[in-house]
View 1 (cartoon, rainbow, N blue to C red):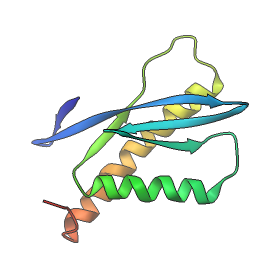
View 2 (view 1 turned 90 degrees about the vertical axis):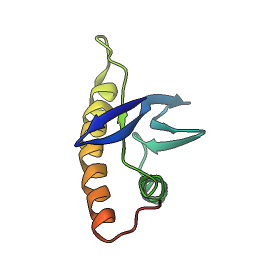
View 3 (view 1 turned 135 degrees about the vertical axis):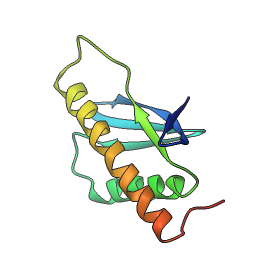
View 4 (view 1 turned 180 degrees about the horizontal axis):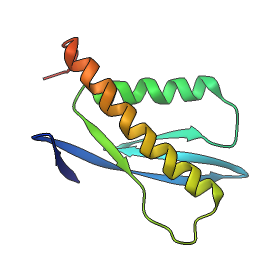
Length: 106
């Protein structure tokens, strides 16, 4: 999905809460890859890995994530939804910095 923001087209990718056993993850689907951020487990190296991948994708163009609305969502869903909102703001700021340092891939 594409949206227009500030005269530029931005892709919108899906984010959703996934469950693996008893652990919850925030999964980001970007084209053919899926990045899983642990929500209920302390895994700083995995979090760094996900953010590094996000920056690599960001160098190819600005994007954001959206989550499907759920009226009956649980606490983890609402925490993840707020996380995505904040992440989208951070992605936009990092993209502007990448542009300023001419690190965007053509």
